[in-house]
Image (cartoon, rainbow over all chains, first blue to last red):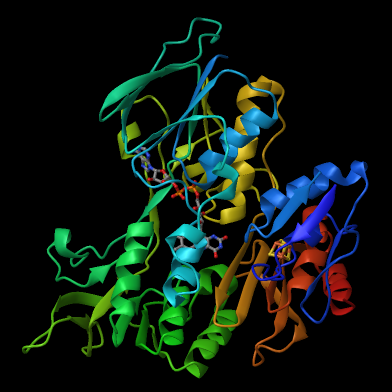
Length: 63
Length: 412
Ligand SMILES: Cc1cc2nc3c(=O)[nH]c(=O)nc-3n(C[C@H](O)[C@H](O)[C@H](O)COP(=O)(O)OP(=O)(O)OC[C@H]3O[C@@H](n4cnc5c(N)ncnc54)[C@H](O)[C@@H]3O)c2cc1C
Ligand code: SF4
């Protein structure tokens, strides 16, 4: 599973970070960092939830 | 359950339908909407669509793409007949009456949202008001304002400093339109965030050149005196503001008229139990659902994007899971973008809550506020502080003490 964020659309509102902090982090510079681009399968539910709950529809999952 | 009908092809309805499929429902799903547009996302209507960053093709709801449902767009629900349930209450379902037919169902998701309130006496052309008075709720509303902006609109009066009004004011300023913002309360969003924070946000708008008038209401709107087009907005302090357009953002009313007499309880929304169940086989979600929250100790009706997604999913699960479904009691969350200012609230604040600024100051354009009641944390507001909001969200869910929350938030 690969996490792809469209950074042109992402607004750093950190919704994904609240749901899956293992994968997403918005730092003090207000930018989103994807901590693990290929998270393990046990994180799939959380990452899929982040995809659905991202208000900018900025996250995609491949695989 | 074989046939589920969803009323409303917007955020709550689409996420309900998607959740039904994800959870393995193989029967038929029909999604009905009065509008003919493909499902679209509303938040950009007052933001990127007005500033010109997005066009109508950029705001489709991604979760609606490839969804295995039958769309029935352009059909309005006009009535509901529920099967009389047997003594054991087991018979589910009924018939949904449309303006162009009807649909039988075993399960129904009511997700037809809300409509913008208009000014009682001068709500626009159909309420006897002049041309140029509008609201902002639908794609068509937004496109009308967008084309006025593209045609060089030079002045606008925004009535109501709620989220929609503040965002419209910001988007119009970003396009160099002269904006007057009129709000009858002492501060924007005072009831939601308290007057201090509301006045701080008013300051943001003033710094961007908005003429913010607080504590003054609108008496009536008339066609502009003299030869020019546009409107005269008569305020109750006696002054008159003239503008080419008036955008009214004074809240919404749930779309429940068509449910009168159906047997559902309608009271400021569709009244549900704590699992979003409104009647046998009928659930509600999104802006029009009203349900008892144990967490906040009251009936809630929430008009935010995230709530529409979460309640849509929960309502779908309730239909499939039956009475074992867990109570729906999340912590609400919303955001609003105005200029470069990102406002986010997780949980509840309120005018009379205890409030403590934990980062920055209200004079900056970057601060965070922790809200509490009876010694407990109830909400966290971030203005350009997304990390604070994200990291405090779990603590709001846990309901830790207000003092601990202030300490924790200061350390972030
Ligand atoms: C301009 C704007 C900006 C916003 N910005 C934000 C934001 O920044 N952050 C945030 O958290 N929230 C925001 N929101 C709120 C968010 O968009 C709503 O909470 C959300 O759209 C609610 O979804 P819903 O599906 O319950 O209802 P709606 O989106 O209102 O959809 C209801 C659907 O039902 C249909 N319908 C109505 N009556 C009938 C009928 N009788 N028969 C058939 N169909 C019917 C309507 O056509 C509509 O498509 C914004 C809303 C607007 C309008
Ligand atoms: S939720 Fe979406 S918009 Fe927000 S930080 Fe994550 S990817 Fe960006």
